[in-house]
Length: 248
Ligand code: BJW
Image 1 (cartoon, rainbow, N blue to C red):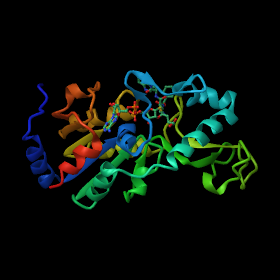
Image 2: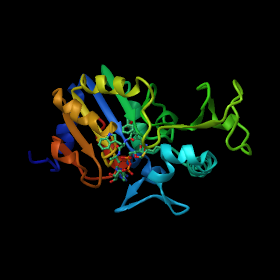
Image 3: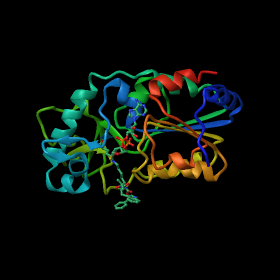
């Protein structure tokens, strides 16, 4: 199917937004890029830290081998995130939550910027870098409440080591979150896919599920992705510039 990218797409999309009953949005690292958060896969390269590609350090295997190194990586990441503010894409999506009979926001991001922009009930598929989780009893705690010199931190509930509460490669997603997202994807009539390379599963399966169920699928990304082919409309541009133009 030919993808649309003409000047009048904005008016067509505003019309679709005006009549939508359930808008569903899946976001990825690109939605936070204009806030200064590095993406994972950009310009043909992948993020590398201390000589390790991110998919090595952000993996279940690395967690098992070297938990302090994983903490060091996430301490570094939170050091960057601490200087980042939500951008116009985050604030537009936050406004949308009260603009439709139903709205669902699903993110792969662990940066917490959707909530910082005012979005409620965000389905965080890959967890949150600002939370720690006990390896023993599952107790969760805001990292900012933990001793920054203790790596790994020790759980106040049971004394076991804690880990960043994120989903690493080779790990299962939090129980129920993907299932909830998939159910909502199958119930939406307008689906936005914003700032994701759409290669990490199972998240990348959600837009196809929405389309299978009859939703109109829109991608906002400066680059093509494996999903572009099945989209009804692709808008090649930056999320922080495109989404505010869709105010209806
Ligand atoms: C802009 C922009 C701007 C730039 N505006 N856009 C099926 C087939 C093959 C493999 C698998 C499969 N099912 C599962 C797997 C294995 C694996 C997987 O998917 N691998 C693929 C890479 C092949 N999946 C998993 O392991 C998942 N677990 C799982 O499936 O459990 C069951 C299982 C267990 C064991 C074995 C098998 C199955 C878990 C995945 C967890 C992903 N975790 C990470 C790290 C989180 C922690 C951390 O932050 O370090 O999540 S990986 C990383 O990728 C991160 C992201 O959330 C995720 C997605 O990346 P995203 O958001 O798309 O970012 P980028 O950087 O890739 O793309 C940015 C995009 O933005 C680009 O397109 C730019 O163009 C665009 N952009 N500026 C708009 N201003």
